[in-house]
Length: 396
Ligand SMILES: [Zn+2]
Ligand SMILES: [Zn+2]
Image (cartoon, rainbow, N blue to C red):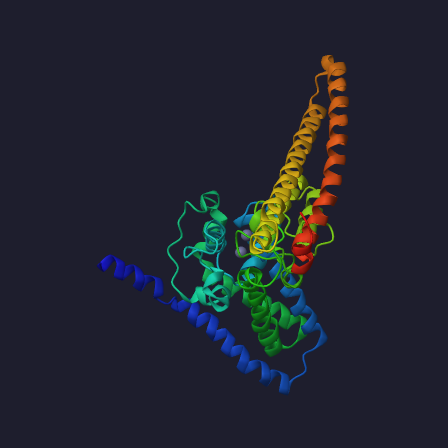
């Protein structure tokens, strides 16, 4: 009984450091910003430097805290790591340990009570109020791969001092560039911190509320292009929660994800390596599974007005065949790659013959997948996007 009481007391106790820091700087900003705007003109150099700082901080959180440390989706040169850790600390979002710890738990227990920023508990909880509550101690097992690294331990242990020092350095540098100490503090520090924080926090709140779910409806995460702009590529959160090990969030070439472009570019000059990427056929298979689920849901909704059995059989049959062809294509392409990588010269003729057969099989499967994918898209369009009256008038 007393243990239960203690647990409930703990879960509701306030983290006074966070409460005072977060509400304190918001209050200071809301008081100082109007005073500054009324009495002074912000110079162009101050505005542009602040925008540059905003970009650097968000890129460091996206590329560093999130994709490098929390998910280990690539590895990078120590100089790049130092750069990302510096700007990640300027962003003032806690130590790499605490950020990665909470984020890994968010992925593992998404939408449950164990999720630190669980979206079902409401916008304000997932956006910022969760930080006002005392969090359990860091469990080293959750971040075992980061825990033994001395530089990260140092950052975690002395986080408050380092955070104040780096932000003071940035303020000083801005002051030297613009000659405007008050503007550098109000706009370059407080307002920049405000924008960096709320943009990041939108990923925990809005990116679990407002957008589309093409890859999975098993969690609340959504894709939202606008949020990608605000966070340097983190808005494709439905994809990210489905394939968290991918170094990309905007998986299509045209999706706005500057972090993926920077990581990829660094890999081309040898400064990033071991980039983890989900195979495009695996992604397609996932899309088919998500579409299948949504179509069966719609058919279930309309089951009293349409021939439920034939419609669901049609969906299941098409999904099964397409998935089998996608699996076959993946296996065949893996085999081709393996054979190409083998360097056994004495078996060259046998290998070439096998390769030719595999290429024929690959072309066949590719044609099947292309045809079935076209039919699948037409079926998705018909079942999910047609008005109810059209569906009820059609035979399956
Ligand atoms: Zn999330
Ligand atoms: Zn993540």
